[in-house]
Length: 398
Image 1: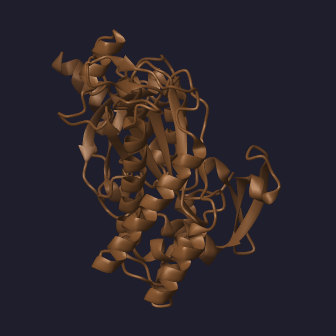
Image 2 (image 1 turned 180 degrees about the vertical axis):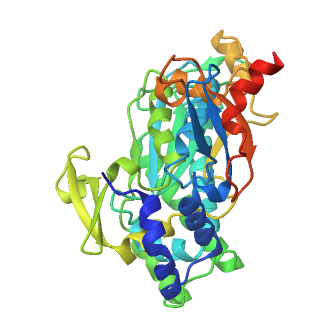
């Protein structure tokens, strides 16, 4: 049986934390992963309505980096996202920051990521506002990722962008060219904006330079980065945005490594799968196996815990989600009706499981009827003694 992240943290985190500095966000993430779906968090009992089957279900920690309880949250996010996306082609655009700036990211994660979001947003909105490219207001959905397949820092932003937008006269305008924007123009504008914003935040003290980097070193680094192209990708338009949203959903919840990639712990090393990228001679699809020492694995994983309450997915333009988004006007211009917003909120966990085909998780193995949740019990306690006689009491009450 493959090792789980919960087992790794349970066995090795206390020793790691006693020897290395761990932030409050990291401590909270580690505690949640160690105690997810355990007696520590309390739970409830799931029973067959005919009394054939009973099981204890311990509560999930609901931490966004926990791979064990991410599935329902991920499916809920994806369903809401698909409901929100306009029925038009979408482009997938990726803005990647140079690895030379990773030292600054480590010390200023929230402010650094905020700068990335703002630079990408302003770049796309200003270029697409130009009639030469679109001359309209697009919908933009951006998601922050900070890791690569081996958990090393790789700070980049995935954007889903409508291939079209709402014009000032209320009509839907399509882009002048199939590519939406020229890649070099997009890269140059983004590079200039990010550098200017980063420099301003350093000067104002909102971003602190690491002790090993002086102000002079910082200026030299920015000048050096001006002479090299940055990695900005713009992909051909997809028929709609749901495919890209499905891809992003895998990284929205569950942290930097999924449970299916973890293989074993051998000789105090964590063995896991990874996709071999083009920089390593692969095509991004072929898989390899690597191993990291326990301390290195935990250190890399913890580095990607986002600051508490930091919003890693954001909408802009038509997808901004506020009263200025004009999303309903865009739907009208495309000739479609707004979706029913309440339908997703009313689904129970059993219905989510059924919609995904996970019938074993929500139905009785004997008669196939949907399980019923009852007898919640508090953290650190066992189910009440009468929980398993629930069916008989239901019958007596009837």
